[in-house]
Each structure stands twice: as structure tokens, then as C-alpha cells.
Image (spheres, rainbow, N blue to C red):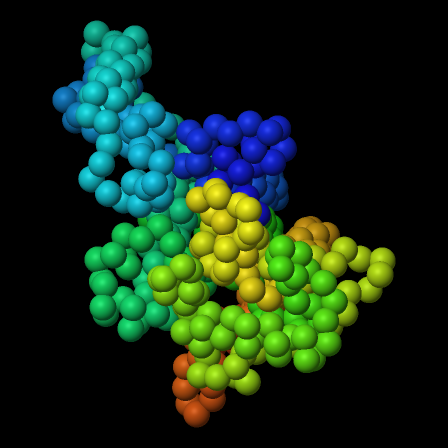
Length: 446
């Protein structure tokens, strides 16, 4: 596993650059997912603009104004925050402190913050004054929908993170109630559907405000959302963020943490050997009982598992993986490993993030191949909701999350939302087709 870039460079190039430990692989893949989504949605918006489905909006702007006090203060403040944290992370963070904990703490480097704040304020002053005119002019500019992709992506990022945290804390309400502030500011714990819902609301509000036709925007966004999800799940797999599936009882770990074939007795013996982990989420190390996992079960018989042998023509880790050195620090100690992330799951699990990446990549290619053939507004977005909900519902059958009693049915938060997306997507597709057929019939009537 590569919880951050320090482990990537150590494994690939044999160098130990601890300054890279603040760059999490999960965060980098999420950023990459947003970049890919921005490219795809921009491409689709341009295509729809050429088709005459989307139009520019004229706005009045003022050019030639010198830098204002607000401009300088805003850029200076942003520079100070980044410098305070970034310089502190690179050169002054104590080795024993987790990078995420450092970011959300009050620690930082004051001189670094002041220096970068001044640099950004001066840069803004020079940029504005270089373009300044003796008398500022007001001009009308035409702004196309694809010109606003940057704003859309930023809104999606901000409200996506907020929504993810809200829904994650709702899913872990007991932990949130005990430690509300810590839960809200913690860098861990993100729920995809929470981010999707809140980000969608924010983006639709913004599009409506900017006169972007919603039905064409959401259709353009549909394939972008699918490929972004596929790329984001790579981050989950590579970092080992806890989104793995149930245990594969066809395999166990040996004493060195390597995965070996097993029978049912071997798997049961492995459960018994690590009983405190499975029942209490704790491991015994020396004279201490350390809490390392939030996946606990009433008895060993309740530990979810399924036995499936890997075909000889496919890599073993496709079916059984124990996520060594995962970012969550979940599991038992790996013999001989002294790094900060030095744990491995006591038994192999199904790598469900990898499955989601493969499935969603295929679904993206399928949607991409249909995008020019589907001309009915809202149909493409409805198809995305149906496919994404179906995919997530199936994968949730192999993943362990907290169940809820909803109308007498035991369901996880993700399963419930996935079913709602499937129902909503199907309804939207039918509604869009019926409305389109009705419109065509009306147009051909004499």
C-alpha cells in the first residue's frame, strides 16, 4: 500500500523523503478525478454548444482597475494559510505527528506564512497594476457554459467534501455524538453519495443563476461523474482507506503477512487467533490493548466471509488482499516493518475498490459510446443514476457497512441511496422519453 508519496518513492526508487508524507495518495487521486471530470464535462459542453443546445450569457465587467485593499488582503490571507501549513509540513513537522492531524491543528510556521502571504499580495498588486488603465472601462463579455467549468468543479469540490462529511457522520452517529468537533474536522471519513447529493444541489443552483440549461448540463456531466468515481476509487485501493469488502475465507495470512490458500478450519483458526481484533477492534501489543479497527462483531461466527478461489490466470490479489501498510493503520503489526504505517489486515478481504474502478471504467466507456446517439434531454443523466446505483448496490453486498432498519428492511445508507438512484434514474429515463415523444407528436400534427 501507498498511504502517501513517501511510500511510493521509497518502494519505487529506494529513497526515504519524509517531506513527501503529507501528500496522501487518496487525496492526489481525488484531485486527478476532478481534473478528468473537468476535461470530460468541458468537452461535452462544447459539443452541445456547437449543436445549438447551450448558449452564452452576456455579463458586464470592469477592466483596468488597480488592485484594491480587498484583493490584497484576500490573496495575502490565502498565501499566509498555505505558507503557514505547507512550510510547516515540509520542514518543521515532528515525525511522530500524522500529516492530517498537523493540517487540522493550530501548528504551522509563522515566518513561512508571512513570507508566502506577502509574495501573493505583491504578485496580485503587480498583476492588477500592470493591466490598470487611466480610467477603468466597463465592457460586455460573452461567457459560454464551458467557460464556467472551473467554477463548477470548485463548487463540486467544496460542497462534495461538506456533504461527504455530513453523511459520514450520520452513518456513524454514535461516534459523532461523543466527539462532534473532532469528527467534523477529521480528514478521514468521506461518503461518496453525501458528496454527490450536496454538490449536485450547489451546482444546479449555480447553473440556474448563470442561465445554463440544466437538462443539457446534467447530461454533459453524467459520463464525467462516472469516470471521476472510477479514478477516485483507485485512491481508495492504493491507500487502503477501509472501503474493502468482506473476508475471503479461501485464504489466510501466514506469520509474515503473506497470503496463502486455506480451508474452512484454517480460516476459523485465524479468526480465533485474532479474536480481540474481530470482536473488540483491538490488538494486544506488549502490555497494551490498542484500538485499531471499527469493524467489530458480536461473535466470531458473525464475521462476514465468503470462500472464492482465484482462477490461475488472474492475480491472487484480485480476489484476496490484506492491505499491508494501509492508511487507516488497521490490522496487526507486520513483522520487521518499523514505518509509521506498519499494519496488515489479519485475514484477506475482497478488494472492492478495485472492482468498482473496473466496473465504472467499463460503464464510462459504454456511456461515452452512446452520448452522440442519445438526444433525449435527461436520458443520459437518468442512465448514469441507474448504472451507478446498480453498481453500488451490487458491490455493497460484498462490503460491510453499518445497517439501518428502513421500513422494516435492513439496509446500509449506501444501499438505500443506491436503490433510490436506481428508481430515480429509471423514472427519469421513462419520463424524458415520454415527454420527448409527446413533443415530437405535437410538432408533426397539422
